[in-house]
Image 1 (cartoon, rainbow, N blue to C red):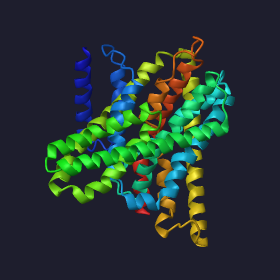
Image 2 (tube, rainbow, N blue to C red; image 1 turned 90 degrees about the vertical axis):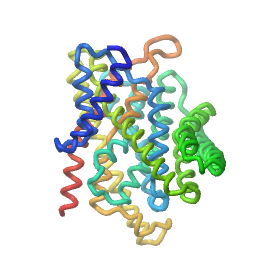
Image 3 (cartoon, rainbow, N blue to C red; image 1 turned 120 degrees about the vertical axis):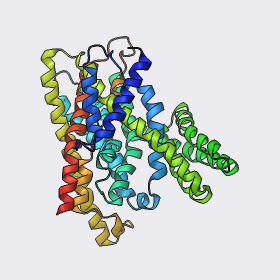
Image 4 (cartoon, rainbow, N blue to C red; image 1 turned 45 degrees about the vertical axis):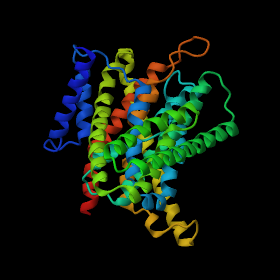
Length: 414
């Protein structure tokens, strides 16, 4: 098959399976992943390697922008304490926890390599969680927390990954320097996002009577913002998020209702196609990476991946329930401006905990591992890290993806 034929073939499968997902009572992301695995084993289908640069440029900006644009800013602000805990603190806790287990469990995993694996799997993919729970009637606050987490945690994971890879290549890790660079990356991303938001608002304010031009500028700007931020060596993820948040607030004052509906229709189609392609691509990676592992190592590595999956879930549950306790204590003492709306109940805490699935960003940064070190020697344990990362992503998406709707329905019925 020619490359363009494969793309059309995958798109056709994606659209067809999405249409029948409701009838077979399976979440469509899970169905697409299983289909991707099956397609990947078809002999006539060539290996479809995921290009990290394509993921970060083509997939990430529009998905982040759409989520930021549509998120409820008042609810986001109310729950900012919980969102920042999940998107920053939990990311580094998870990376460290996975690193400790990997170092003592997996043969050949040095501390730097273990932290690389931990950083890769530290961030959750709320796109998957929101796709799976869509229509299940989650509370507005829970939806906002999951979406808000996804807007920031990718940036945290990418920073942790960068430092971990630097440690493997021999660069000394200095905590204060790492903290300073993290702050600069985040602050620079915020600044770029705000500036690009002002520029886009200035343009839209003058062309909003022309709906096609306005929508075109809104489609283009997330990609431009991401590229500018990355070229300035600050967080493109945070820049796109701030762009979406700022334009969302601006659009309420300027956009006529007709333009809002046109824009929403176009974005809905784009996000539907991107989401579907992501889940198909995730499934396609398993047949591709399994060929790089010795047959005798497949089962042990799958076992390691299962242990890491359970560990990540436990760490998330512990942190979410500790956050619930901390919020309640702060509210009772009247400190830190914690309102009653920011408190977490038991049901929402369990749903948020179980929604910690890994996804496309984890795969992209895993497959984006350098092939060689600076001295030309092969990057150690590269195939093992990629394989374990892919299996953990599949475990979380299929395992938690299948059980999450059941948990939500059970909790709602109580």
